[in-house]
Amino acid sequence: MLKAGIMEDGLVKASEEGTPQGSILSPLLSNIYLHYALDLWFENRFKKYCKEGAYYFRFADDFLACFQDKRDAEDFYNRLGDRLEGFNLELAEEKTHIIEFGRFVREDARKRGQKPPEFTFLGFTHYCGKTKNGYFKVKRRTSRKKLGQGLRKFSEWARRGRCYLKKGEMLRRAKTKIVGHLSYYAITDNSKRCNSFIYHATGILFKWLNRKSQRTTYTWEGFRDALKWIGWPSAKIRKNLSPFRRAEAL
Image (cartoon, rainbow, N blue to C red):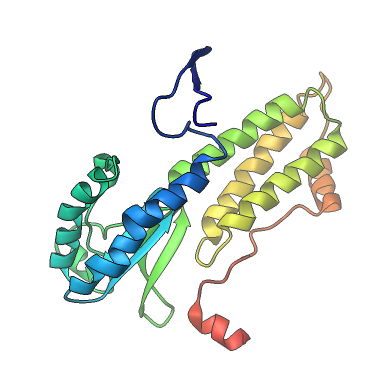
């Protein structure tokens, strides 16, 4: 696989280093490689010298480092490039930032007339929010990029699917795609973005079903009956991230 090369514009080029993008082997090798390049270095070496709490999260080649002390964050950022360079890796500077985030940041930003900082990780935009009782809470919503990508893929599938799928089969497959999206994104505090995805996907499906022939396939009333018949999914929370509610469930 490492010597298979890559295809660009219909031409195959030999790969001299790294793993081909999109290869099924790439995630596995990146996890193994970064385990030694970053994970062990952070936990066993860097974290020991931090003045306050330090936390590290990684999924494939995306990672997030959290520090209670600003100086620790700056020290990590300054040393990160050299650490990766030692493993023949480069830091994506355009995607790497130091931001303030926490319970006091929201109020401080508003005093300066600014919006509280946000960051995107694994398809979710993380932002500073509050509970119903006014306490600080980290909230998450589907990032605009991922929401747009999901709807474009759904639209492209529906456009192609209307040419070879029967109405019933197209409805069932569309349901499966919606459920797949919700299985990942339907988490605490993200109902609004999930409802938005369902709303727009439903409109897209209605549009392309009615273009299967010159005659109108569905009225809105008939379309709603069909969705009800197959059990069209709703934006019900699949993953509860509230620690207090999880404790009550136990």
